[in-house]
Image: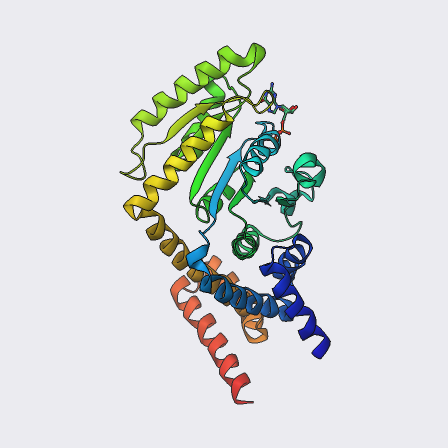
Length: 343
Ligand code: GDP
């Protein structure tokens, strides 16, 4: 309707001006499960990107930083302190949370808005808690689009926070320029478990809580992680992963952490790896959306649903080869789709 159109236009202008309330509403639109809303959101992002790209010569792109770490590592304390440091330097900061745990358990590990009170009240920061529903795939898509919206809204730095439990790290690593791991000063054994999975994909590892009684443990962890990283093959021949000890409580080492991130960005821009990585990410995202959308349509198709249950059972019992069943499912899908478009 006309009214809706007017509202969406207002939203577009609001987002481009960097107004937080409009940005919030736009991200909500992106996260909506209503098909019309999603289409409107796509239009909004496309238009916003076009307008934004026209001004690219005066605006640098945002720096997207993934931050992961086990519960209790101090992620929110770190972001609160680090975020203030960044806004003090004159940057506009957006923080997005990816918390797939909330899908399964109904509870959220990353918790709610109250975690970062100072930043929440900082006019140069925008904090977006994680959406409560959705699969990891859905969250990934929403987050990629939320990143795009923050970028066109003029945010210079976008931190995507996730809990260090399982698959969400790789998902986040695929949408950011720099993936950063925040660790508590852990004992050797604990470290082993965390190290294997995530340290491998991090370009920067931060050892938090290096204050008071915890300084010796943090120092030891730092040395251990450095050692572990030495024997891993770095992902990029332009960058060896760095380890930095810090305290989010006493605000020490945060400046050094930022220096490392800036060095990383310069190195990546200089070598062309920055753009190359983003191009690859865009391509991967496109195909994963195609995959997700297709599967969604397929499962919603009445014809497919009709044959699926029986067919699946027969495949499981070994009566029908999996490949042949797959062909039948796709054929059925195409059949009803074509029927639909003719009718
Ligand atoms: P998250 O679950 O990773 O977001 O962790 P939180 O930020 O909620 O922090 C977990 C606990 O660690 C809290 O009690 C914090 O006060 C504490 N903490 C966070 N950063 C530091 C730090 O640098 N030093 C010390 N000593 N404690 C910290």
